Length: 339
Image 1 (tube, helix red, strand yellow):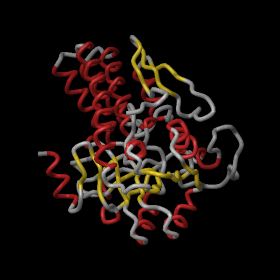
Image 2 (image 1 turned 90 degrees about the horizontal axis):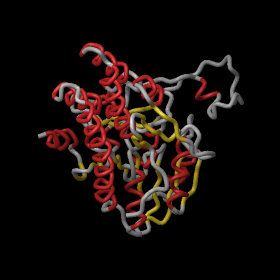
Image 3 (image 1 turned 60 degrees about the vertical axis):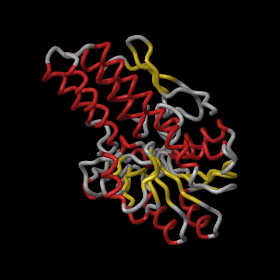
């Protein structure tokens, strides 16, 4: 299996080295995180993004929190601080809760905590590879697929979820072409997914988000594959803004809509999409998407900037996980994963 030419995160002694995804594709720069607050800002400011990678990064953040804290209460307060960085991505809370248990069970042993954080990172890569192999079985030869936002190696500890499926299927000669939505407002599709597709050598075309409906209507797309930031018990899925309307078009024209995500992205405590918190971000991301001071809209305009929308389960064909493919009825089959 071919690997990427980059790493998203790695530990180097007492510091965490993170690929600054805000600078891609122009430059590949790494930043250092040396404390809990550094990790919080790396997640909040989208130096790292993508639910699985947020979880892996936060796991190392808990290691910093344990080292810095003089009491259990201070440690738990720092963990709550980390959890507040991105409220929608459930992997953040999942990883922090797992690390909190390890901290309390090991009496805050730093070596044990670092081993657990490395384990979370390694398990993420293993899960991505496994779900990618399951997902590739869903595609026929010479498929043309469409993806939205970035759910590749850049969104994970390595390999990727939705883009991992695409890469695996391409290696199996099942994909002939990929269309990538540019993904407004932060352009993760243009900056990140396009970068990964070119890096991996997959024939691909970047499109404005609004062009996806035309391609689907005209019969040029065989499947839509996207990632997820949180999946409710009934299969409702939060993903990058724009996924919901994409699912409506796909359903209208009978194009399969696949969600690719590890089991850690499933929120077993949230019954449906109404219970998923949707993060709203600054208006500057919309009117100054490249963060360079070149406004594309007047500063006086009000902006509504939710990072995610919720795709209802009835618009989803299947959910691809490392434990296999989940088909409807989602609620019953998702519940079975927990047992």
